[in-house]
Length: 287
Image (tube, rainbow, N blue to C red; front, side, top):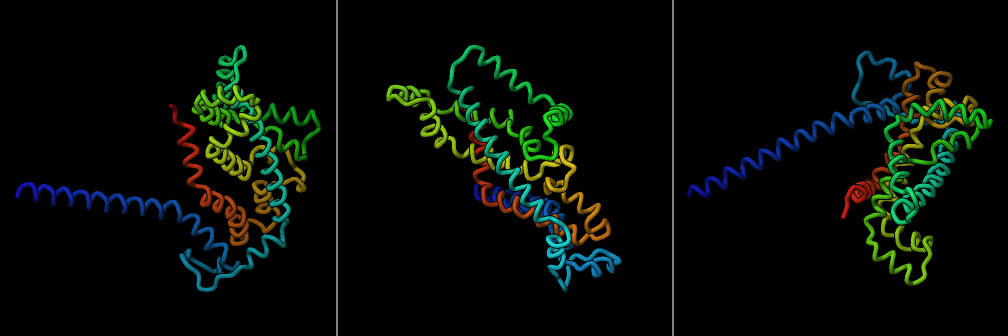
């Protein structure tokens, strides 16, 4: 009898714990998602309706898409999209080539001073990226690469963190596979592309997605290296639109532009969220 009472009490405590946990998670989800809801809501309000609200309204009975039309017709948002896509694709492709080759060299090849070089390489992670912005700016200016795609792309094609993450993943692949491939006469290049990359695909997909997000949201460097609207990315273009496009008072149109910019990244994360988590977890494990 006492055992049944203890079991029932334990079930009640477990049920109460789950209720509290889900309640807190729901509250946190509302806090996190509310800014996105407010952004979308504002984007579907007309300019007159938005300005006529004395107190903010949490809904609208007359949604409109006129702000989205304005975002692509009154300002060159479409051109900024094209520039950002070019910048993202080229930068990500170059980063992948450099990251895969560097990670493979540190994980599998033997050369004098490899451990020292890798240690010095990792020490670069201790330097804030803001400290090298001026150096990069001076270098790109001296090479006459301001207001150009090479000037935008070159400082972003290498990442110490991504090389380290993929190197750790490559190191988990058993050495026996490498020796067996060498016995069969496979070159290092063939072993890399036919064995290592397929095995470590989740991590490669992860760093690809993270790099795409990083490029899409990049602001400081594009803002510094470009002052020609022909080369503006979305991050810079949105600020330019706010200052010289719709005007600071046209908040609904600005929110429509921000929603249009945010949707590709949200969709990308929702589609590949499992791959991201799997790749990060595999990159952090050993053995």
